[in-house]
Length: 213
Image 1 (cartoon, rainbow, N blue to C red):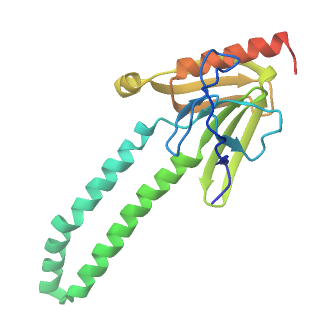
Image 2 (image 1 turned 180 degrees about the vertical axis):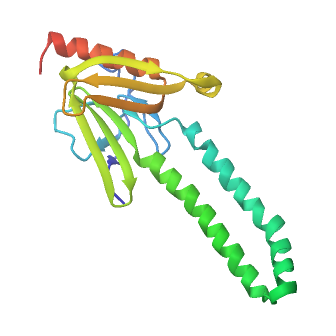
Image 3 (image 1 turned 90 degrees about the vertical axis):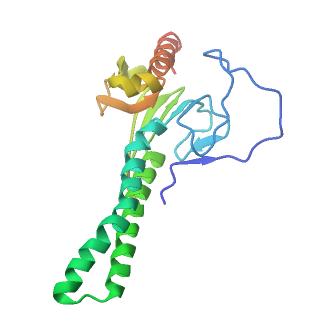
């Protein structure tokens, strides 16, 4: 499994800390975190010593709902459909009962594989904003990922899109970032609180403009 980020060993418990910027507390993260402002216990593999994570993002968890519904539907298909198919085939070519067991097993393994791959894709596709750069890590498959980054000072334009009733209800959308770098366009897809993400990025670009790194 590729190393994308790691949770650090928690330090001894201390009083809550105010973030020096953006006026919020540091968020404690867990395995299902989709939005964390100034996360406490996360580092990523290319993080520099003095680099601070401002935002840690994944796609909103609700985006997994279609995969969960599909998997649930697939679980109910074999008990309803397979007996009729095998009964019909047994009357013509005499299939043994063991073939039905193999068919059930293959079907459920395939259904679980679809759900697992969608979950892994969601879990390892992450977006990170630090005090120096924006990072887009795209998980393609178990042995390949794409890592794109751009310096904060190269950001030229930031906007977001929230499309549809579901996205509006659960407050997620696409954040569009235009840069002057090697990768001119970054898209943080279906991330929670897109307006907040734009606000944080805007503050960072203004701060960087006043105090170039």
